[in-house]
Length: 356
Image (cartoon, rainbow, N blue to C red):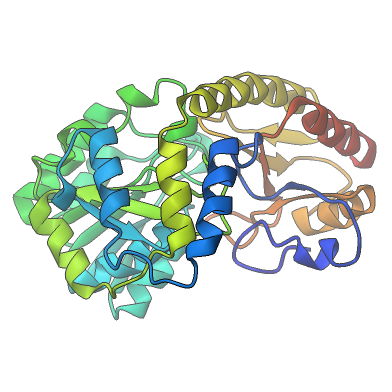
C-alpha cells in the first residue's frame, strides 16, 4: 500500500474524502503548537519579502537553547537536506551505514559518488549495533551515519558508546554523524544525547529535526550541531534562503513553547507504554521494545504474510501503518506504527485484533 520510500503519504486518501488515521509517520500526536500557529498567521503578511538569507534570528534562538555559539549551527530544509549536504561537504569516498536504518543515508552517499559499506545488525540481537565492529571500521571510511535512536528498529546507543565511536573516528579522521531526530521523544534522552561534548570534537556532528517532535513536517526544518570547523564546511556548500520565512518563524516560536514540550513528552511516554503493552498481547505479532515514538512489529505465524497485505485490510478501516519491507535488512513481514493519542491507539489495536 505504501510504495514510496517513506511513510506519511496520505494525500491520495485525503483527496478521496477519507479521514485516515496515519500510523505510518512518527509525528507528535499533539499536533502543531498554538504558538507555532500564531507565528505562522503573523508571518503571512511578510511572505512578499525575502526571508533572512542565513536565518540569523533562528540560529541565535537555537544557540541560546543549546548554550552554544551561532557558528556551531547549520540549518537545513529538513534534516534531510543536511543528510545530503554532509557527504558532499566532506568529499566522502567511503561511507558506513548501519542496517536496517533510515534509507536516505545510503542514497545521500551514493548521490555524492561515495562507496557504501554496511554494518548489518540482527533481529536475534534486537538490532543492537556492535560498537566494537563499527569502531574498527572507522579507519576504513570517511563518514559513519548512525541514527540514535534508530529508525525503524528503536534500538539505541548509550552516550558512552557514542563517545567511544567519536574517539575512534577522531583518531582516524572519519566524521561521525549522529542523527538524533527522535531523541526528543526518548525518556531520559538528556543522558543519551551527544550534544554536550559534540562541540569539542572536531569529528562529530549531531542532527536534530523540528519535523517530528514539533509536528510540522510540511514546513521542513532541521539543524546540525558541531565544531565550527565542521559546520563551516557544510555552510560553504549551502545556498542562501534555504529556510523559508514561515519555517523560520514557526521554529523560533516552538523552541520557546516550554509548556507544549512538557505536555508532548508526557503524552508520548505514557502512550508508548500503553501501545507497546497492547501490541504485545496480540497473537501473531512480534514487537521490539521502543525507545522513541514508534514501535517496530513483525507478522509472526499468522494468516497475513506481509505488511502490504496488512495495510490492504487496515485501509478499509481507514488506518495505515508503515510497511518496512523496503528497509535494507528487513523483509515484507515488518511494519512500524507511530505512537498516537490514546483514542487513536485504541482504534489501531482493535483493528489489528480484528484483521489478524
